[in-house]
Image (cartoon, rainbow, N blue to C red):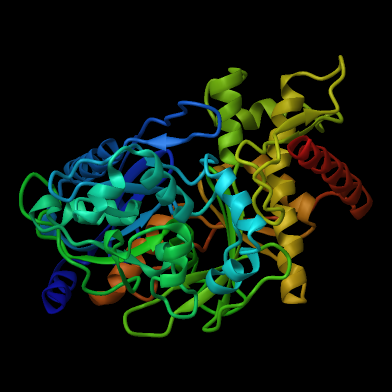
Length: 509
């Protein structure tokens, strides 16, 4: 199959990318120069049945992936046979448990933002397991990761543990669910996950790159329901014939979304870093072939593993709520009609007027790791208006990023000198300028913001001949230079830290 894929790549040079994200699914096609030639996107519902619960309909996601591919190809006048291969990138940590005989999920997917497992996290800490988990997996006890979510479903869905014992349960992050369906589903679908996604479950040993029996025992998860762990690219299967618009196309790459962005940016050397602005923010720095343990609240994660090569690792600062805070202004408060309107509204005022907004809707992730933290807005006066709140929302994105940069600088022992950015919110000029001001370093935005999907396509193309050497879509963008002095910068950051202390106190009270 691998040799067949190479032949297809040589003839067409077109590579597809499935980008299954937290709020939508997309399909993009890139040509041999890395230029985007087709795209379609469909949002999916966000289930919020009760406080702390965030759910997705896995069937809706499966169907939207198929529909996106079909429509993107149709709009560009392409067929499956025109594609050399496809790569998949996905929201990480979100888990699905399904029946392999019927293809039906046993329950809604539990999303990475969900905090229903807070009691389990507290119990892990109470039992003194935190240091072992950090050393073994690179991850602290937190509601963020997949293991607790899988455990919750096994414990709370009636009959699910018995079904697992009978062989009627498969489990995985979204990549495993999508690939299983594309490659046949109940008719012989391939049950795999790549090392980047596996490294986010808290069930894989960061050194062994395999499921860890002791961790499986701690979380009460049977090994047989988990997918096989594979490299981030290679001969991973092919889309089966049938209703899929991608029938017959080889799948040659799987990467978690943030790791795909690293590949898209070309951050394949130690020391290189990027920040993605999406539903949350994710800042990763390549640390090379040896896992680096953080002393300042960052995560150790697999960056990628290409074929049979050694894995590369990264330090990551994960921020739960950034772009989704803007969605909250739109959907819950109704002060903007679309996410794009926040830039104009925030630009109506020169500063936030003393208002601070800590959007700890899912607790606070890096570097605090406090699932009990609570969101708050403080510093309000009669002078405050919706423009001040909009600006405080953008500031919260920038300040949370600075928290992570400070931790990364401390771990690396050297100050970051620039920040490469991507993601939907990176298109916001005001946000990027504020980010440069708050960090005090240049922020570099590429011309091509679809770095995540491009990274998946680039990894897939490596297997089938690769893109042309000129296929670097992250160049030719804009550099935002800091525009405020250090006194103003540090005063603003001190105000943010006071607000964070309040959010932490609210959680512990």
